[in-house]
Length: 125
Image 1 (cartoon, rainbow, N blue to C red):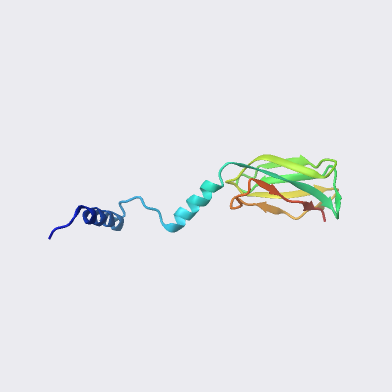
Image 2: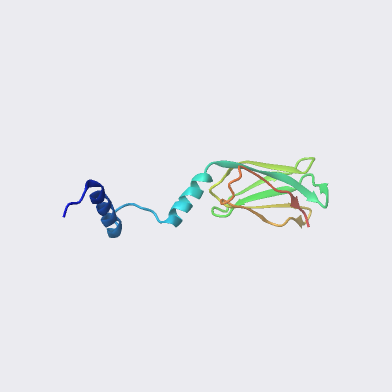
């Protein structure tokens, strides 16, 4: 039986895959690797702290890394704004604000979110 070179290479590759020798990833692993590659680097997390429609001056905004539990904080400006730079895109974070016994809902800054600028207003309750 005569086998041409292309068929021989294809059969060899198939045999290696079947034996588990070749370093090939499954589709799920390729998707995860692709998502991870997109979400590398740093992002900015910013927004405003509000009580109703009014900006809150001097509220403490917290950004907590869900894995390491490290917390960063920022005091809102005279217009209620807060700003965190250099937020790692491969980690998930909890984001919330507090002032005078009031607290906002906790929002998640997800590693699956590929935005380089995450903007979210935090409303005190």
